Amino acid sequence: MIMKRVVSKVLSSRMFKRITGNKEGTEKGVKAFQDIPGPLALPLVGSTWKYILPLKDKYDPERLHEAARQKYDNYGPLVRETLPDGTGLLSVFDPDDIKSFLQQTMQQPDRRSHLALKKYRLDRPHMYSSGGLLPSNGAEWQKLRKASQVIFGKPDAVLGHLPDVDMIMREFVQLLRELRSPQNYVSDLLDLIKMMNLEVMLAVLLDQRYGCVSTHPSPQCEALMRAGSRSTQAILNTDNGPLQLYRYFDTPLYRQLIESQDLIYSEAKKQYERMQKTISSKSDDMSNTENECRNEGGSKQSSISTESDKGGTVKKKTSILEHLCRSPQLGEKDVIGLLCDSLMAGVDTTSYSLAFALYHLSSNKTAQQQLAEEAARLLQQTHGQVTGNVLSKARYTVAVVKESLRLNPISIGIGRVNTHKPIVLRGYHIPAGTTIVSMNQHIGRNPDYFSNCNEFRPERFMSDTRPHSHALLPFGQGSRMCIAQNIAKQTIYTALLHMVYNFDMTWTGGPLDCKVRLINEPDGPLLLTLGDRTRNN
Ligand code: HEM
Image 1 (spheres, rainbow, N blue to C red):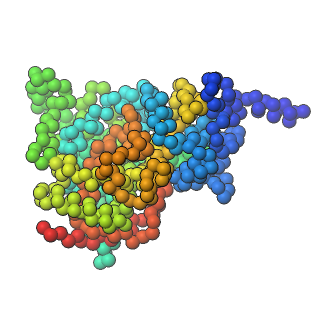
Image 2: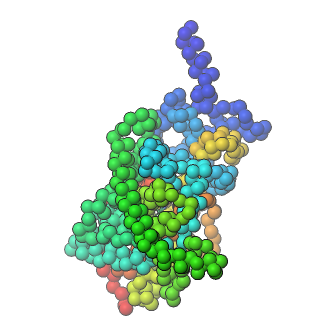
Image 3: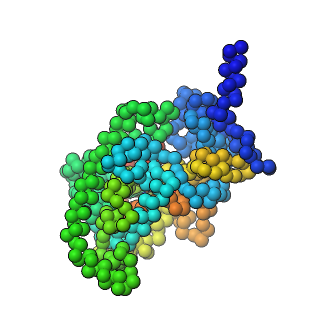
């Protein structure tokens, strides 16, 4: 009798209805959410048992791209799962559906990620004003994004730093030559790439050189590089942990996040204070320039010249930090939070994307030769310097990066939550609060969308036939897309041009795949040789 009552209570509970899908509220002719195919949901754990139990067809949380293939093969283009809190998780495999859900959520592009990072920051109001750009949603996110969006795209902040990026790449090439073994191997190549990208980020964000590209980098460089990776790893595992115990006490993973974030914070704060002093000492100069600009009807930010020289390089450069500090919409804690977000999000993403591009080039000699010819042709005219003009003509380089990101994007797709209003997708009612994820990594290797889908063929991006606008979204989409994509692309293009200009690369390992640590990272070492490239010039 008691058992019967318990069962009937569970069946009528709100939680159970949310888990199994609630038919209430669906429009006529629209199918219910629970009718979307997907694995069984259980009370308390939802569908996460599929990722936990040691079953033959388990979803491996470190290989979400393989789990995506299992879901697609078993259930089709729309797959429903249930999170432990009872809300839905929807995987979307059709580019038309991806376009549709992104359009329906574009007014409020909320994401459900970086939850522990948000808690860490909100628990420290003396250090941060908010959860920051990555984890925040709604008005909080909008305020930060609106004020920083324009800054991350400014020519004097991005193109203005191209000479620095170019210089860092030359130092990087020199370092690789020094560290090369007689067999042309460089050990721990991925870590060296991360140090190089950290140096680029510090140059662009702060206009500072830290000396990370060196045979003996300072402990500070090492610590900052590791802090980014350790944060990323802790964020994924805390986000995905079914019980989210970090919300109640400091679990070892949450402590890892605290330590690494504290370290990034202290560097960001130091740099903020330095910049404030620089700005005060420059203030007389600036007020003169501003007056000139106002007379010309310009805004405060456009007071910095973006004039280009003949090489297509912006002559004046201003750091992102300086722009942020000068923004009237941002306070000290906002600026520090944005610096922390950038230092964390900027290094591993760019490094893994570059690493995969080097893998594909070193195992595809024809493509590498084509790229080397482009590099030789363009760099001959500039004495080996990558300028804005060079980048504007580097068509094959751009195609190489697109093709590499098709095969190995750094994320499985992009996520949105329709926080406040239900939407309709593929004829199904999607209740408010559902996490909806585009499966672009799967689409990139789906033969329905790309012929010879597993082959590295940059030429496919040089023809007139374009893929579906929502098939590949390596930098996201809409008003929430990657804020620093121009910085990332400029860095990768410059790195690739220098690498093939100097080295003939040969892959000597087996196939390289990815594993997920919030972002997709190579699942093995970069086993390639760096022979000298012979050139005719
Ligand atoms: C190849 C390198 C990179 C790739 C592939 C990449 C990709 C992405 C993607 C897919 C998103 C989510 C977009 C969405 O939800 O629509 C994103 C967001 C973001 N990225 Fe990047 N990213 C890269 C480099 C960088 C760099 C260098 C920085 C640092 C300055 C950065 C900072 C951010 C930030 C702060 C966000 C959150 C934006 C927001 O929520 O408003 N990323 N990135």
